[in-house]
Amino acid sequence: MSSATEHTSSWYAATRKIERTWPPLQEALEADICIVGAGFTGVNSAIELAQRGFKVALLEARRVGWGASGRNGGELIRGIGHDLDQFHNTLGEEGVMALKKMGTEALEIVKERIQTHQIDCDLVLGYADLGTNAKHRKALDEELESLHAINYPHPLRILEPSELKQQVVDSDFYTGALVDEGSGHLHPLNLLLGEVQVAEQLGVKIFEQSAVIELIKGDRPLVKTAQGSIHCDRVILACNGYLNPDLEPWLGGKVLPAGSYVVATEPLPDALCSQLMPGRKAVADMRTTLDYYRISQDNRLIFGGLCTYTGRDPKNIAAALLPNIEKVFPQLDKVKIDYQWGGMLGIGANRLPQIGQLPDCPAIYFAQAYAGHGVNATHLAAKVLAEKISTENDQRYALFAKVNHMTFPGGRHLRAPLLATGMLWHRIKELF
Ligand SMILES: Cc1cc2nc3c(=O)[nH]c(=O)nc-3n(C[C@H](O)[C@H](O)[C@H](O)COP(=O)(O)OP(=O)(O)OC[C@H]3O[C@@H](n4cnc5c(N)ncnc54)[C@H](O)[C@@H]3O)c2cc1C
Image 1 (cartoon, protein in one colour):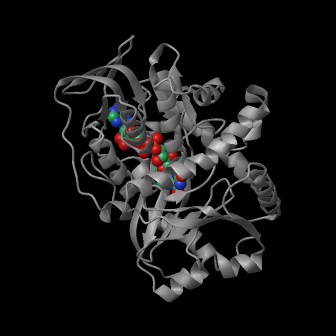
Image 2 (spheres, rainbow, N blue to C red):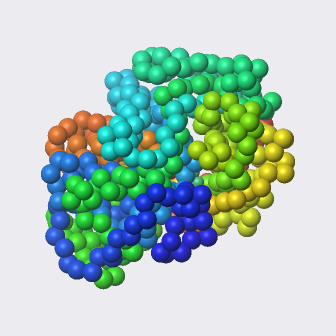
Image 3 (cartoon, protein in one colour):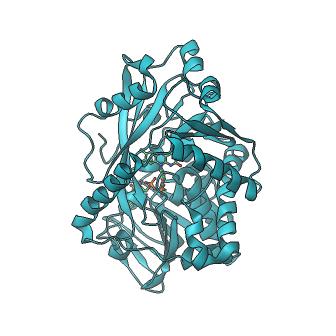
């Protein structure tokens, strides 16, 4: 579906606004910071640190945005992590409240970056969580209450099934919606390519086709690629679902790659778009294996879902996703699919983004495991890391670093089947 030198066969790659390549690293460089991985985490860490005066080099194994950041559903959704109240014992009420507020700040960082640098990435505000059963309907009320408790600064409203059909999705599949006018959707690859240009203008040295193959730990780590190396004060590992566990086994044990898949239909007539999704909001339902979808700027339904833990893509992504589309929109039973693709997201056991330092080498930082909420959370993680590394503020970093992240049992080969069994159990529970 993609080669080492190309992006995936996604609609995003086909409609990217910036056609740039960067050379591979072919020398021995010195830098203050070396960042490994040029997705949202890596590129935004580069921006934040360069803005604070650091000399930064960014190494990407393939192309900038080749990973999940250039392939995702494009949904910009408030919040980081999941069920943050689970961290009360570790972080106290104040700590949990700080995390909840950072979930709103994360949204604003993205919007501000787009606005300040005039990044052309089709940002549309408006998002809805959709319930599919009575339990979800109750959970929507609870979510509304908890957003009010943090003074969420954007309009929110609950819709009953008849209202949501008129205002959000013309489907009988849902039991209620929570509409959030502060979240929304965008073209993620164009956002990332806009951001990498910002990084470059700030003096960041960018290298593609430069997979890191060895990390030599120490006070000043040495980062090696096939044809070059970087000696630096600090490293940031920003590889997320694409981290090769052999490069850093301790970190690799904490994040599980999971596949998620997306299709883009042929462009639909204006009237049909307005009927299917009046208001053109992004939506996601609340099931464990959820559907997420929206209408693009050029009138395509961008529909994502499925979940795999085997590292193998479905043979035919369109055939696997079409029944899900037809279940929501029976009126689209003959729709043509123009693009289909998938990517790897990184999942941690407690679903809080993992931000920290390697225990055996504090000069090496990492940020990963955003599950399906990475578009906003990556931007926040980058800021939190830069605050810590620049010694501007380490309190926010300390909250993340204090949380213990379980190593998935089963070693490299048994992890995925074990998780698949666990997820199946969650899906079975949803049926009752
Ligand atoms: C199909 C799909 C749909 C999604 N939908 C949404 C959504 O709608 N909303 C949302 O908020 N989130 C969504 N997500 C999650 C979100 O995309 C990710 O959480 C986020 O993009 C992670 O960004 P990242 O920079 O940490 O990792 P990535 O974007 O995956 O980047 C990691 C990079 O590291 C590079 N790399 C790996 N190893 C090395 C090495 N040794 N040397 C150099 N480089 C290396 C990889 O090539 C890759 O480019 C989705 C994810 C997928 C896959």
